[in-house]
Picture 1 (tube, rainbow, N blue to C red):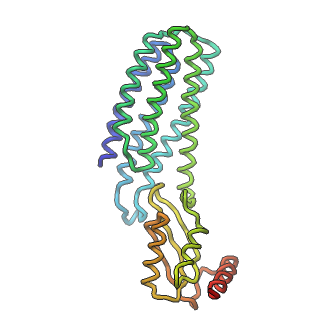
Picture 2: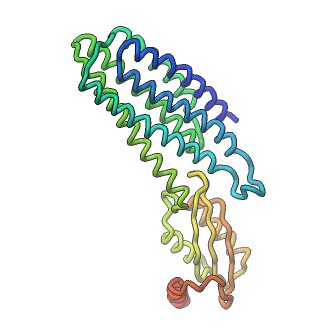
Picture 3: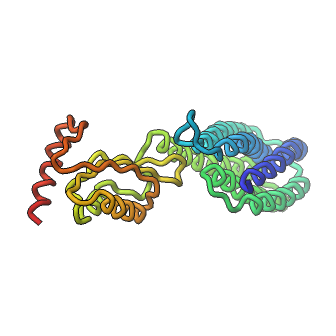
Length: 298
């Protein structure tokens, strides 16, 4: 349960820190620090959510969830991403307002805060470094972002301290927010692909089919469905037409599939003369017939 414990630690650290930070932003008059605080609050909230969902996602499959609970972890990633999307838009709005109406900033206070920020976030990033789920990856990505954000704020604060260019502050704030926004959108797409049962990254169905047809005794493969529950474990189901010993063919097919990174496979084996019940799809039938004949001439 290392992952979940790490997430809990990160959550408490972040929550505690974002409150202090918000006060610091108000105290120093720095919108960049406030934007970091908003970002951290979002992180804290999302980490809290993912803590509970990550715990749930570790449950074993049962009668209610026959595929297991790993999608809960994915929902955690989704909520996190949405929070960050809103947070970053709000930050950009505030910063734009600040560019129009600049105000006093306490640079020394800002430098002190930024140093503390870098140290605390670096610690949190190290704690959450090794994670296996999409969720944990998202959490760690935030941590690294936070460190970067604070390094930027620190440099900005030092520059402003010596040049008095107060406009640097909201500009930094917008850069951090855009960075968060772009990453959040990318994450969102990843989660969406999982829910839409899109073929997982790095797997080409036609290539897989070719490889399977090269196995001796495999006459045809159809109804190939490939999906992933959580972005890590890939499941496949397919129908295989064969004239050889079913047991042997199964072994060979599973071997080929595992080379493509597919470990969980449900295979339905059919004899040549057997009519697959689902061959109503005439297009596929025609195609299969084509492949069939051309396969026999080998």
